[in-house]
Length: 176
Image 1 (cartoon, one colour):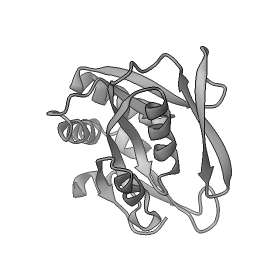
Image 2 (cartoon, rainbow, N blue to C red; image 1 turned 90 degrees about the vertical axis):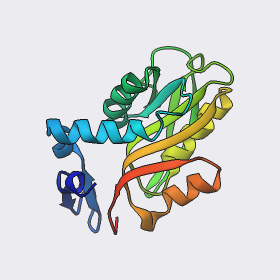
Image 3 (cartoon, helix red, strand yellow; image 1 turned 30 degrees about the vertical axis):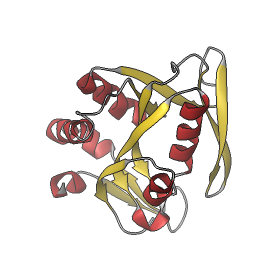
Image 4 (cartoon, rainbow, N blue to C red; image 1 turned 120 degrees about the horizontal axis):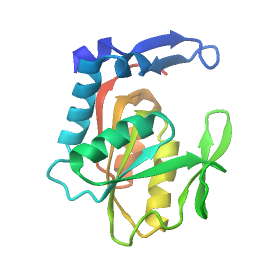
C-alpha cells in the first residue's frame, strides 16, 4: 500500500504543536487512490456476513458509504452528539485533550446484525471503542473494524484486538 501512503499528506503541528496530522483529503481527491483504498478495505470483509457498515463522522462517512455499497449492505452514521434528528443513544469517550460523545439512532441496528466499523484513522482507539460499545448496546455484533491509517505507537489497534475485534488498516505511520 505504499502508493496509498504517498497520497496521504502530513501537516505538522495540527491541531496543536507536536502533532503530525495525517490528512486523507489528498487521497480522496485521487480517483485511483480512492478506488484502491475502498476496494482494499472492502476486500478484507468480502467473505464476512456484514449487515451494515457503521461510519464514524466525518471521513468514515465517505469511506463507509462506498464500502457498504461494495459489500451490498446498509450504512449507519455514527455522529457527534446532537447531530442526528431521531431518538439516539450515546457513548462517551476520552480524547487526548478531553471527553466527547458519539451517537447513533436507537433503531439503527437490528439485534444480531453484524456491523463493520469504518473510519479514516485509528490512533488511541477511543472513538472506535466507543463505536463498538454503541453497536453492542444496540444488540449488534461488531464484525470488525477497518481504517486507512494506523498510528501504531498510540495503541488503537491493540486496544480493539484485545476486545476481540478483528481490525484492519491499510497503512501505518510512526509518531502521532
